[in-house]
Image (cartoon, rainbow, N blue to C red; front, side):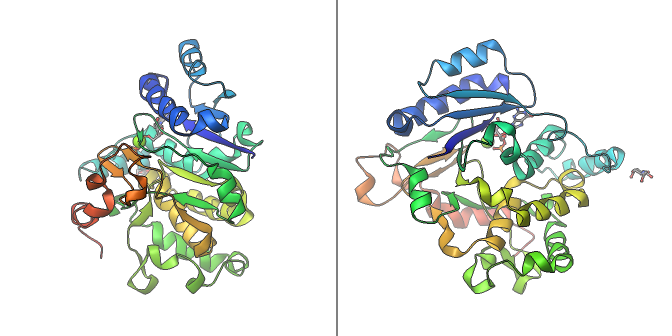
Length: 314
Ligand SMILES: Nc1nc2c(ncn2[C@@H]2O[C@H](COP(=O)(O)OP(=O)(O)O)[C@@H](O)[C@H]2O)c(=O)[nH]1
Ligand SMILES: *[C@@H]1O[C@H](CO)[C@@H](O)[C@H](O)[C@H]1NC(C)=O
Ligand SMILES: [Mg+2]
């Protein structure tokens, strides 16, 4: 399959990404030998390249992300952006005052799939430093995606901090109004996952999103004219910088709008931990494949997560 792992990471996260790659190799890739694409807004050090390369027999590519994909567009008022960051920081939102986090979210939303090192591929699996993969995966997940017509695979869904995306939904609605030629191409609401993200009969964002730190998906989904028009519209509005739009709500709203329900896949069998949250398959057939504790499965604590994260919507 024309597929790869894609890893955006910093040199100082070497230990964390070695930990992840070691698990990916043991759980999946020693059987399939899919290549890796490592991307960074800085040059990778020789130490980084050597230590990563020694973890796998698969092909490993290292690339730099240039200014056009990681930097302020000319139409962004950076003074205004700084004022807005300070305002969000006063609300205690994670990464509120971080410029690099915003460049990262914009890159993951609109550019990673256009990096030249990804040109050779049709599907990707996004991995991050300092996560755990808990289960043996003994089939080719990329072939599964293709054979079953799947375009977007996830394993954790969550609530967004609404303070990071106050104008995102209105911008999406404005996009739909100004691009009837795109809307015409989209599936009907009843066939899509629009109602996974739409609140108040479509008047507002309900904050639900797929966690994008794990994604197995089609690159063509993001390379499509429909998505590129959508991303450009969002990007011009400035919300990646004036607010703190995450790639998770952006990908999720776009996929919910553009795909049919059956083009999504819940990777229940891929046990996964990112920060304090774990997806662990609870069915007994997974006990001999997974090392995680099913009692830790995020599905069981979702109600708690709602209360914690989502005070102002719903
Ligand atoms: N090269 C590079 N990678 C970054 C930067 N900021 C975040 N990342 C990567 O982007 C991904 C998401 O960042 P992370 O800090 O884990 O954000 P979180 O998962 O939302 O808490 C991780 O793979 C990070 O290594 C950055 O400034 N430069
Ligand atoms: C940029 O933003 C600052 C702060 O909000 C504002 O004072 C200034 O007029 C803006 N500049 C332009 C060119 O719009
Ligand atoms: Mg992370």
